[in-house]
Image (cartoon, rainbow, N blue to C red):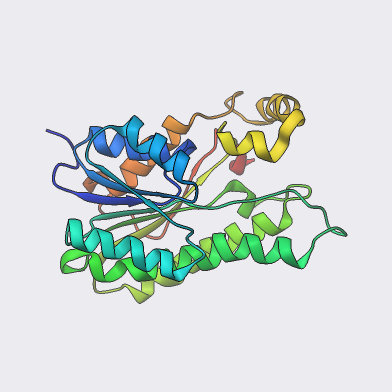
Length: 248
């Protein structure tokens, strides 16, 4: 028996890193999982890795028609949704003085607009207005990081959205929480830092109270906790999974 036997979950950005690790643990715990990704080859590879109880849906969360397509498939195949892990997001480094309009819109269209409509369009699928929504934030949303202001602002916006959403959902049993990872080695870091990755990770280790960076599987553990009945009275929080860095 798994913790999520008979449950249906959607994981956006589920082709690598934290999203894939969470999808894998959901499947292992008995859930049927729909994962999304923008690139078909990576989506196919993730579906193959998960192996069972999974459907891959190609899409970009900043495009509302792609979200409609996703939820149409969920409705057609399973008829309802119990868990939403709104994880898809992106970020890039540009310092003040070099920030472009394109950089701003690309970041906010995915991280803010995409998250808003990922959540809003999912609501009709929750049976009896009951379920769990987990939104990926970041420690960058509550601390300053050089050249990362636009990304940080987008994650701070997500935190504030959730504060209001739990009031909008008052009277239902749909819980919404923010999970904010710290430094976690995922494929996205290779693209973000390139040749500077090792130096960044070494600096991070020295700053983090636990003395190491995190693993995608550790963040996935927190996702499953927030999705489970074990967190049934937890609503509207920001859970930092960051080795303690946000507390100092």
